Length: 114
Length: 115
Image (cartoon, rainbow over all chains, first blue to last red; front, side, top):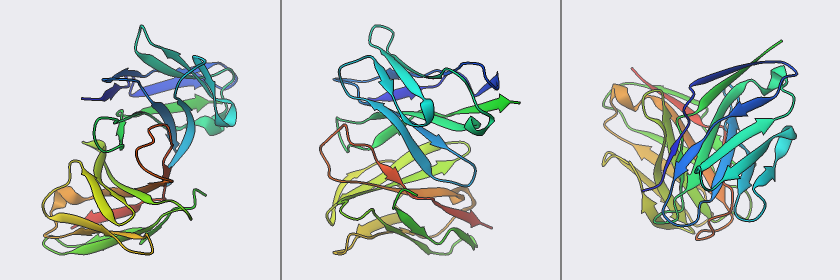
């Protein structure tokens, strides 16, 4: 079965510093990995995805993610954090074995401190 | 704005009641997915419809059902409601199914409170 882990419930970072939100996955077959962000009282917004190819994926709002097959990780990164980046971040893997739905990690709350 | 709409935004009801949540996918999207977000269970997949047909079921209770209509909007019906059904219910849509690299676009959600 596909699964996603986000080992940190909360990540705090100072504005202007680089940020990393961690994600590890377990899949059978090729991993199709996604990052979504959820702002308060809003739906999930797509940030970026890894399908194949370059291990460094660039996405929206200056975010990028690094795919590491040997470590089964897909960490989200940003070189310089903004206070407006404070939100709940979800890593997800596509369930290619059954319904094509997403299997989400538990989420990581990012707080960027001014 | 993702282009996916959900109504109502908020719903407050009592235990034992039945409610219907509505979702309109993005124009052109044939697939609709329903997810439940709760504090203890996180984001859980409920059910997937493609062009009017049920394609997959996840952790959906027997008290819950869904359908997708010819105009592609979808409804999630929750009956015999319990306190534990209080959650945020999301609908998501994508262009097609069977293509694993397509992202899904999420609606703003319906917050259900069962008293």
